[in-house]
Image (cartoon, rainbow, N blue to C red; front, side, top):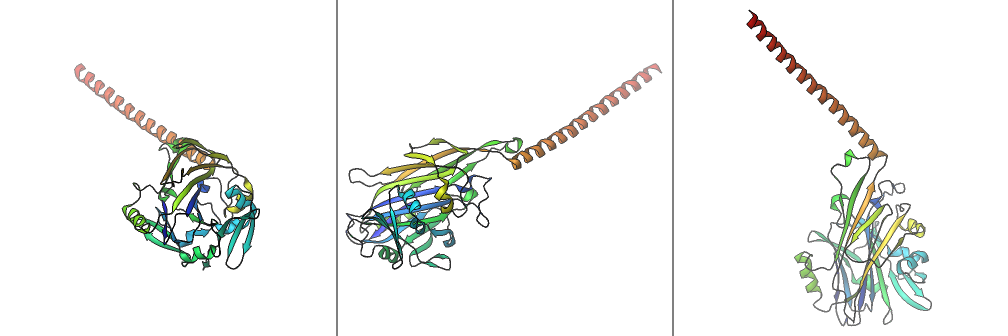
Length: 351
């Protein structure tokens, strides 16, 4: 995936932090979620921009076909102090303003950032604030100038604005981030090890489609906004074990059930582990790209798997017995035929 800005003016003092949270909610097969709220995997994209005056648009490319109904404004939940402090790991106070609609997060007397609240229309985010376009076998999301101006109105120098989007992802083989390898002999086992791996790549030009790479170069002709930090966090059920990681994680912890159970519409399984990776720019240079490969081992067992195994074992035994009986009957008939032929030959000699 990729994130970049369209600017019009001096962006030398403008920086952007990018935060990506992949929630593997559907990884626990026994977790059914709340009524009418089945568990679904989703990606949250947080963008913290300092000195946003020259930014005209923020583009996000996702390597998957996403519908507008699958996108939600996760920023509205930062009105809860516990959520805001959990996301930023700062001691914050939340102030909600109705016009323009936004949330101000304050650290003491200082403004930590302003969080934008997207306009909604018919249950979806309004296109005047967030446009959506099918682009190069994926989806291009654009936070428009109207949204940027709304949240940055009368903002002071060196203060920051924040956008946070939640994107529900397709499941199964269509998922762009999680891939599952299931053993072929799983039906012959009462429990089996399943391999899951997460391949997250950000702004890697060599892996982006050529159309996306060309658009990035064209959009950044008038100025390139420096990405000062890339943070990638993944949360998955505790019974999944992290067996390999391409880079060393920054930190990990057991996810607190409160407030995150209410943060996720379906709720979360009883026990999830969070791993956090990050890459920061150094010596005034930004982060050009970021990639993280994570391999998980998940033990799958349960009543359904056990029942399937017992049925397969029963059928296997039944067919084995039938086959053995058939082979035995065939051998018996062959032996009887051979004996009969021998008896006939002996009788002919006697005559």
